[in-house]
Amino acid sequence: MPEPGTVQRRQENLWLNLLCSAILPGFLLSFLSTDQRLGPVWGLVVSLSIPLGYGVWDLWTFRRLNVIGIIGIVSTLLTGVLGLLKTDGFWIAVKEAALPAILGLAIPLSLRTRQPLVRTLLYNDQVLDTKRIHVALEEKGNLDPFEKLLAWASWVLAASFLLSSILNFSLARWLITALPGTAAFNDQLGKMNWLSWPVVMIPSTAIMFYALIKLLKGVEALTGLKGDELFHHREGRRP
Image 1 (tube, one colour):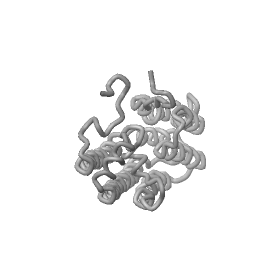
Image 2 (spheres, rainbow, N blue to C red):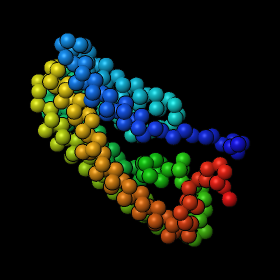
Image 3 (cartoon, helix red, strand yellow):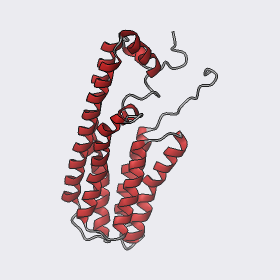
Image 4 (cartoon, one colour):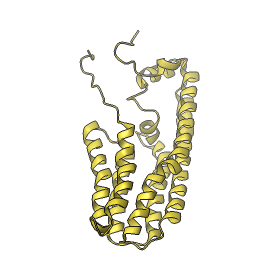
């Protein structure tokens, strides 16, 4: 049984996220956009309603401010608006590059606020036992070195999103060549949607994983805590 006053948080399903954000929209954009089915306009609307609906459901279900989820919702809405307005593919590429670039710039800038984004994206109290870590840092007098470590991780995270921005723009310019408002345009948009996962997400995630590993190693060195001691213990594993 969970301790009184604690809330058990459900973990997001990565495979469901991938299915709703990339695989299904990409398939439906190609399948529904022909004149024999829904046509380019309604094919675009129906296909993009899936990642939009999933993003709203995710925010409602987990009841937490998910920066990445909000960006996904905004990105989907902008894609739909630009597609319905039959905007040139160049502006689709600009949109794909702009959102991760803005987030990449916001991460180091947020270090001057009460809640730096690095604490949401990497140093997250839903996973790490941040209270125990803070006590250990205070005991060893290492709060200042820890803040420098967070600043370093913020710049690495910013680099990962700026890389994502460059790759997004390049992928969109390479793929989207058809006239807006056509089935071919929707087909290319669908391909870009699911190709962005291996092309963009893999290198960006690798950089984020590197930043996380270095952050954990640094926290271990500054606190004296090791391995599982940094994380919240699941019920039944608490010593």
